[in-house]
Structure formats: C-alpha cells, structure tokens
Image (cartoon, rainbow, N blue to C red):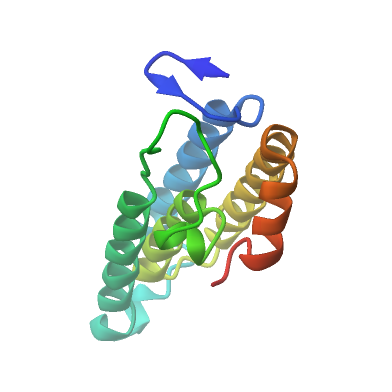
Length: 156
C-alpha cells in the first residue's frame, strides 16, 4: 500500500495512521489533563524529581534514538527482510520506540489514570504489528517466518 509521501514495502495495517493518531490524542489529552491541569492522580508531586523526571527523559531519548535507527533504506533492486542493526534485535523497533516514548512521558508524571491510555497504546501497537506481520509473511514467506523465529517481537 502506498500513501502520499509513504511507500510501504509490504503494506501496513488498515487505518494504521488513524489508529496511531487516535492513540496519540487520547494519551496526550488524558496525560496533560491529569498531570498538569486537574492533578487528580499524578504521583509526581510526592516523588523526588530524580526518581521520575530524569528517568522519564532518559526513556524518551532512548525511544527517539530507537525510532531514528528504525529508518532503514533498502539496498539493492528488490526489497528484502532487514535483519541487521536494530532489526536484528527486535522485529518492530519503530513501534517499540513509540511505546517507549509514551512510557517515558508517563514516567515523568506517574499519572495513575494515564495508565489506561498507555495500556491502549500497547494494545494498539501490538494490533498494528500483528497485522503488518501477516502482510510481511504474505510478501516474504519463509524468509520472514525464519526471521520471526530468530528475532523477538518486542523485547530484545
């Protein structure tokens, strides 16, 4: 499938962009409203700065680095299963980076109520990853199935 400005090798999950935007809006709205406006459940105000904000920033930076390293350009005339660099450690580094980004923001305020949208983010990205893996198996067959046996989906 191809989108304006996007060329996906095997396609992507149906409504992938809408799902990701929806997850972002819901998470951000709940996180901001609870952490900074209403302050109903955030624990940040009872925890020393170095126990949540600094680790949260570290996780956010790690997420951004992982996401940046996930952009792989195929070499050669034909697309193939990328098994090097971050893709040699985890099958969905971009999605994992996205989840870690949300987790990092959650860590900075420890908003209890924001755990619900965070869980939705994890479930949503797992849904997208599963859908894309089906497309990749259709396109690359045994090559992708062998890759799945060697490389874990989320945790290296």
